[in-house]
Length: 333
Image (tube, rainbow, N blue to C red; front, side, top):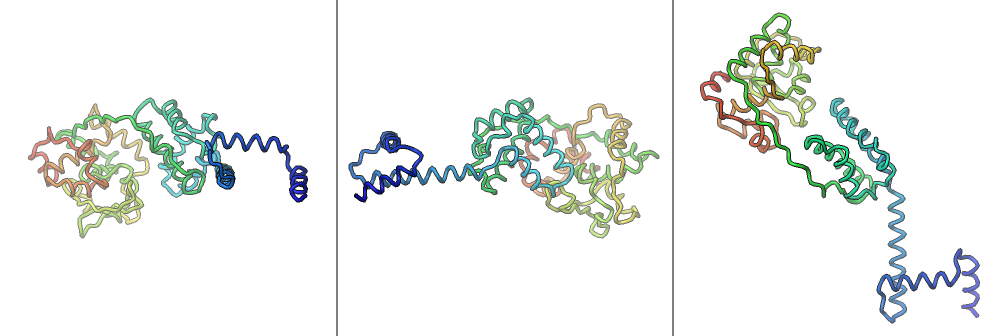
C-alpha cells in the first residue's frame, strides 16, 4: 500500500514516465559496465554519476565566454605602461575579430581550438606567433584564477623556433660618426640620451623614462628604477666612456633626459650619421659585445643590462668576433 502511494505521488510530479526512468537506468548499467548483483552498489554508483554530472553542469554555468575572458584579462592589467597595453590590445582585438571563438565558454576551449586560432591568424612569423601565444596563455591563466576554467590548454602548444639575425656591433668609425652627429646644433639635445644608449646599454624605452635626477654624480652611475625598467627590476649602471660627460650637465632634476620629439630626431640622427644598415638595438648589442671583450664578466654584464639570466646574452646579444681589445679599451676609457 505504501509503495503504491509513493509510486502515485512520484508519477504525478515527474515530467517523465516510469518506463523512461527504467530505460535510463538500463542505459547507465550498460554504459558503466555495472555487473554487480548487489542492488545497493548499483544505486550508489548511479548517485555518484548524478552528483558528478550536476557538479559539471554547475562548473559550466560558472564559466564565461572566451570574449569576456579576454576583455576582463586586459582590464586586470590596466596598470601596465601605455605602450605595453597598446601591444596587448592589438593582439587581443585580432583574436576577437574571429567570431567563431568568441562565444565558446572558456572552460570548453580545447588545445585544438587554441592551435587553430594561433596558427591560422598569427602563424606568419615565429615572433608574432610567440607573442600571440603569450597573450593567449595569460588569458587562460587569468581564467584559472577567476575559476572560469581549470586548465591552460596553451601550455601544450609548441612554439616555432626563432632564428635571430646575428648582430654586427658598430665599428669605431661608426661610433665616432654617431657622437659627432649628435654634437650638431639641431641634434645636440639627443647627445645625453645617445650616450646612455651607447655607453651604458640602456634600452630606448627606458631612456625615454629617465630624468636627470636618476644620474648620481657622486656614485657616477645612472639609476634605472622599477618604474622606468622594462622588466620592473631596478639596477644601477656605471657611467663609463662617453657617458662620463653626463656628470658635467646642470639640468633640472625632474626634466627628462630624452627630448620630447624623440622619434623624429632619432630618425634624423640615424640618417645623418651615414650608417646604411642599422640593425635593431645595435647600440645595446655594441655595448654588450664591447663590455664582455673589455671586462670578461658575463654576470656583471647581465646585471648592468637588466636581464634575468645570461641565456639571451649568450644566444643573441654577444658578438666579439670582430671586436678588438684595443677598441673595447678605448670605448670604456
